[in-house]
Each structure stands twice: as structure tokens, then as C-alpha cells.
Image (cartoon, rainbow, N blue to C red):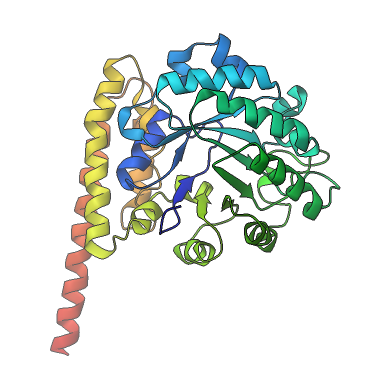
Length: 336
């Protein structure tokens, strides 16, 4: 276990793609990055270049798998190892209609023995295996439900258990509602950690530096979800940078994304695929709204990376104007 509990970025469907991961890695080199969930069947039968491709700078990188067939998950894990992933993770927390139809994701909270079989099979890939789960589903008792799945995972030899500290309600709530409506229960995850020697990380509603630090005192790792997408600058602060160093690093990373976007566009991609992950980089700063608007409107269609350069130039200029205004106000105050 790291002396300082690691920070991970929660996998999110249609969001944590390779462009998002490169951007987050550049903001904070120490992050633990996860892919979007990919089903074992898709890994075996689908377009692997599209589904599994990643940039070397993303390491360490975890491939999150969905499925309930131990044989398929074993095969998918072997493929993940061949592709150079550092770890495979079993999703036992997603409540979407898609996973319910396939009887995997959060549905597996009801089947701890099967979870154990799946995790054991995934170990055949030869790389570490981890679990991401909920506290339980629907009317389950979270004390017994979480313990049962966690104990099965420990018996299977997992390297880590990441717990989203909410129940999933498969009946009556949409996937979006499942991210907010079920109440958070951090103490339940803390009790699990106190009982187990295995790495236990926590996820769910952790959106500030203070919240991260509070959780680091109780668990082995902290996973950030929407805050990392909405306000990615938090990842810079978590790297220990503040003030001018924080600002300079965010600007520098934004600049590095220009040639990255150029390469993506040259290969047939679109600028918006890259810049959509950068919209909140300057949240709360002078010019942030114009930066977002430029990357939302002007980056559409066949736009080139000069749009991103222009947006960065504009927010730097606005920051300089704000600095000059502050200095002028201070001068007036001293003169008075």
C-alpha cells in the first residue's frame, strides 16, 4: 500500500475515454486511471483497437470489465494483459438498464459466490484484479450484502476493493438518479476497511480537497467521480500545487493538448472529442465562461486545434487583465 493513499478517477460510461485519461494524467501524474466499463464479450469479439487502445502515458491503467461469465472474464483478462493493462477491475456497481438486462454490474451484489468465481477466473490473466461495488442493491441489508461480496473478493485474492458508498436501486431509480438519490454511507465503508486487511478504497460524492483528505485518514484510496470531470483543476490541487504554480501547470497542460489534438485530428478524429474534457479546467477563473463557450461552439465540426490555442490565449489575457486590475486597486488603497 502507498504511504499516501492514492487518488483514482472513477470510470464513467461515455466519459473516461483515452482523451480524458491522457488529459487527467497530464494534470496529475500520480492518479490511478480506469477505463470505461467494457463487457467481456466485447473484448473477446469486438474491435479491440477501438475498445482497448490507449496511450503509454496513461499507465498505470486499469481496464474495467463487465460480465458474469467466469470463462469469458478470464479470456478478457488474458487479452487485457496482452494489451499491456496494469490491472483488471470487475464492475459490480453499475445500475444501468443495459447491465440489468445482462444480469451483471450491480445485479451481482445479490450473487457473492458468483462474484468470487468471476474474480478468481480473472486472475488467470496474470495481472492484479480488483473489484468496484456498491453497498448493496434495493432492499438488501448493507451490512451483510457488502460483507458477503467483499469476503468473496478477498477469498479470490483481489488486490483492491473500491466501494461506491451508496446502494443501487435497480427498481424505481434511473442510472442518473442512482448517482445522487441513495444516501451516502461513508461509515459503512470505514467499517469494512477496519475489518479487512485488503486495500479498500472509497467513492461517491467526494468533490473537494477537504473531503479527499478526510477520507484518506480512514481508507486506503479515494476515488473521485464527477468533480474530476466538472472541475478538473482539483486534480492539480491534489498534486500539491497551489497559487501561481497551480495556474501555470493548468496553462502548460492545456498547451500540451494542442499538438495532441492535432495528432487526433490528423488521424480522422474531431477536436471536440478532446476539448469536451477540458471545459471545466479554469472553473472559477476570470474568462472561464468564454473559454467554455469557445470550446463548446467553435470546436464543433471540422475545427482544428487552433481553436484550443485561441481559447488558451484568451484566458491567459483575461488573467493578466485581472492581475493588473488587482494591482491598480492595491495601489489606490495604499495611496488613500
